[in-house]
Length: 289
Image (cartoon, rainbow, N blue to C red; front, side, top):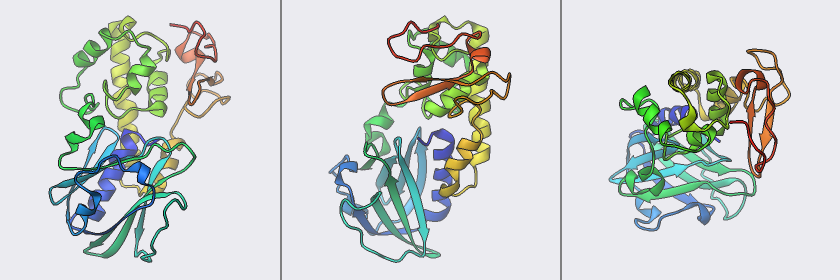
């Protein structure tokens, strides 16, 4: 799943290539992805892109008073094609869910929103204001927003009885962090993924706050300027524990472990994060706090 660094880089890329371009054609290949009906998506045709903004993991293309907002979910991605062939798409065929065609200063381009797998979660909205999208309206603070200081973060954690892994992933608490970067942040902060948020002392809160900015800041710099086709590999190549089950922790050399759930998994280092203890690999276990 693309998270804050990849979505930020994608937003910058689209701004460079689409600002000033006019929407010439919209093809909906999977109607399940379109979550709004008013205004109709056809109203985008003929409008010029005037802005591209990120809201957490959402991207908003703003054109002539309307916003085309999309969330790539777990298996969604973007394919940007310069000098496209103009081929018409068939409903329900292939991985493309939506195609927007543009006419820009350098000629025609296509923007495809794609989704692999059988579980379809990619979402598209056409709204008059991005805040009309429920997921955007419910977002918590961005980690790099001016008001998100360590005191604000401590206040968020002190009021939560959830496990810290879930708190970091909750978009209504902090916007933009998902499964992968929450693993990396907790590893860098030397905190168990199942520690209860409000149980963390001030030192642990400071370590976690610093880790959020260090991990995401580094990822932002690595992703900056890269085209969409390179962002996934860039993300994977810099992970220390996420997706590294069975490998040696680069910090201490212990074996990276995994906890699997029904539809996801997390990775952690026992020596770095849980005082050497192994977390049981099922939801109903008595997890280490």
